Image 1 (spheres, rainbow, N blue to C red):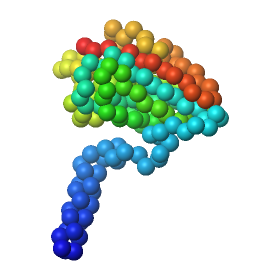
Image 2 (image 1 turned 180 degrees about the vertical axis):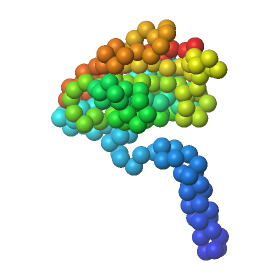
Image 3 (image 1 turned 120 degrees about the vertical axis):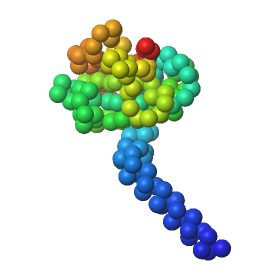
Length: 166
């Protein structure tokens, strides 16, 4: 019996190591509890994101927070925080504890196939739902940081974002 339990634990550990090796560190939830849950201190800066217009309950909604720096906005490695939350129809919510009051920007996409990638068509057009803070019109090209920048203050800061689908 003890051998069977030990083998089970070893097999689970090996499976987790393989998952990390294949998918990278972002495939496993962050250990930092503040990145996933919001506290209740009045001095904390809490951002309550409500992604609206989710069209189907599959995959995840990926929410990425960027600092107010144009060279980091939508750049690889430029994010301040990211959450992938289970899709809830018609509104998916997430809460972030931010480092300070100030200006930030958010990009969101509905990762319907849960492959942790924003899928596009062969001509580069979006193939999944997406949105940005302040809901700019994005008929051609990506919005600029100035179009999506918003300000947060200490305490709770609600932020609705409307998804657009191709």
